[in-house]
Image 1: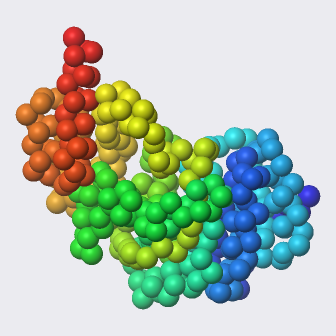
Image 2 (image 1 turned 90 degrees about the vertical axis):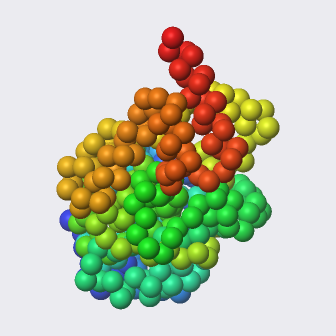
Length: 317
């Protein structure tokens, strides 16, 4: 098998390492890798960390590694899960820039070139770039031309800690970060919080976020990444009453985040957000929904949160 040793991951002639984390991705991985190999930016290498796939993913990866010198593969010796797999991959990479990649998308040919060009002026500070995405279905038919608009994500140019610790919207499969940003994001604080949320939060607190409001890839929505797929009317009605209250699972992560010693203004925002998502009273929830920027400015969404709060309180009695 053309598997590389971790000691061989550092190659100075490459400017960018594209990290791909795979698990049972045989269906779409070839299309993803073909789009990476077609990048107009050539000073890059592709390193794939497979998390002990049980389908034919490893065999597909092996064929690419044998055929293309720029492709290297690593097989984990135990299952890590997606967050820990990305954490390990980032830690093992020492090129000036690191690009994160999923196993089932299709990159536009100039994605890396545009991202690196926009990131280069910030080499002296922790910085990362993220972009919009074009949403497609499992057959690569366009569902929506803008993921940002589809989901209602807003990214002000100025620092916006309140938005990034709550709604976030930073998609890891678009992220390219520099070395200084890598040093800031590691180690991850929790395997229970997605890596792209963590990167977005750390970038807002301690670095520079660059938002490109144009798609740089086709983001594939299918059965195995169901979190962002379109829901049926029946699912929407069910979720209206039964979904857990938003952000509640973030409290342990945010407590750990405070130990990273953010500045006083950011600390105050984080502590206030923790109070909000503790859902201690109806009055405090209304205050957070309508006077803060933690929740989407959507009337139906806010009503849904209030209804779910009342149902949750009723169930606790």
